[in-house]
Amino acid sequence: FNLGDTAWESEVPYVTNSNTAAQHTKLLQVLDDSSFTQHDKVPTRPASGKTLDLLFLSYPNSVSNVSTQSDMSDHLLVLFDIHTKPIRSFKPPHKTYAYKRANWNEISNYISLSSAAFFNSNPEGYSVDENWNMFKSSLFKAVNDHIPQKLSVSKYKLPWITVAIKRHMRKKDRLHKLAMRSRKQCHWESFKKERNLVSKMVKESHSQYLNNVIGESLTNNLKKFWSYARTSKSEIIGIPPLRAGSKFCSTDRDKAEILSSHFASTFTMECLPPPATDQSP
Image (cartoon, rainbow, N blue to C red; front, side, top):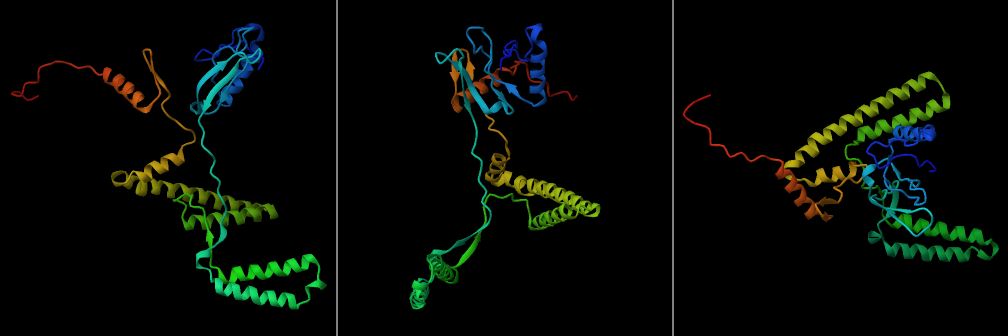
């Protein structure tokens, strides 16, 4: 950004040059409207001493250790550590085969009979595609008839989405498709009514899950609570590296000791005699 007349090192950035205030103020307004924060606080153009290479983020805690490196070009290279987690890939329900329970004898017999029938059908008179389709259909039939199957569903699903809620979700989708096709007001009203009902059911079910399942697990099994907490956060929030005097602490143990010492120092130890017990207030 060729807008270097901004004091980014300040807690609240401000424009330093009145001649270019219009463009700089517009940039600051855009950042404020978009909930962005700028994390590069040092000049990145040594020739002018201005900060031109900016680092905008909507989640402030997702980066740390922002620094610059020289000797690359006339601009300094901005370096930082980013804290992200991979997006979980949700697979739709799909059919899987239980090969351990397959009847291999029946499959072998069926393949032998199909092979004999294939060669007796004069395959030379058919095209390559026709012969391939005959072989493929016979093989698939043997697999589907003699190997048990089950529908595989992803285990990563919201536990408070009940069967009744799923039923209303499907009904909502059907009403939406109907409203899109017909464009009638009555169909749109039905869809909106069902959509609001689904939203209400999800909120109530979520609240019941937190109170009944998560709440009860706090006394005997904290695993459910922490599992819910990990999946609910939108960014990785942690304690950044701390500095105590000249000591720079980055490990969890050192940070815990620094915080414990700091909080202990804020309490006042009063050496007063104990109150008298012979008089009642």
